[in-house]
Image 1 (cartoon, rainbow, N blue to C red):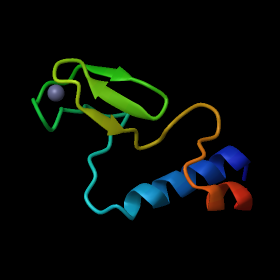
Image 2 (image 1 turned 45 degrees about the horizontal axis):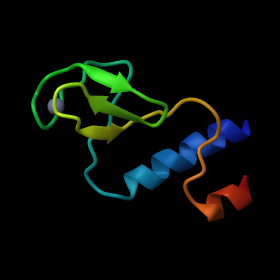
Image 3 (image 1 turned 90 degrees about the horizontal axis):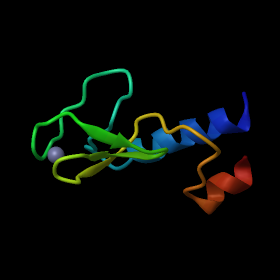
Length: 76
Ligand SMILES: [Zn+2]
């Protein structure tokens, strides 16, 4: 398993520990929990509603490794 896959799994575990969190899924249709519309500006780690500017994290962030926690970084 590559370091990037470890990081993504760690990110998913970190998000999972926060309780109920709305996530943006690239493969599905996503309606904004604030305004109900579905136009998004998608970044590497979050998506922002084009109408009301609500930002939600991506379920599966892309791009270079994401370092959210120094403990996670040491284990990688
Ligand atoms: Zn919205």
